[in-house]
Image (cartoon, one colour):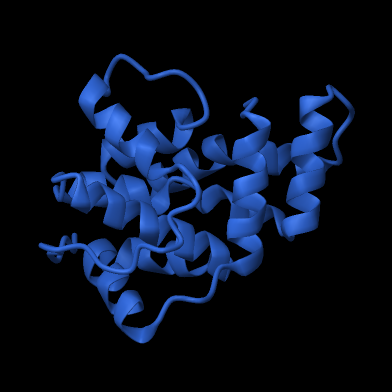
Length: 175
């Protein structure tokens, strides 16, 4: 997973300044995820919850409000929470990885968060799209995800969505 440096800088500031979800935002997430997936989502740090929520809004705003799309956007980074790295630890892991330098076990796990998310999502019975997007979201599009779906999810995962608060047509997609 090698990302452009600008992406890392924007993501750093998104994480640094992200506020927790409001009560109404939490209710929306709960309705989209249902009782099986929601606890994993809410086990994430507030900035990761905010990022997933904003990604879901971006997917919905793009006209793709199917439940599996919303779940994929919300849950793609859920594997990060297992490695308990704050913003500085995450930044250090990314910098060290970009430089090909050795990582601690937690940093290495964080860098493989997509794999960890995919395994957990499979165990929880998440939609196949959510599992596949979590696994591949820092890499190339797998053949089982069509190019339009991939483009929308990848664009939704981009940082600097902090101004987005609402999208028309939000619907419940509880499982």
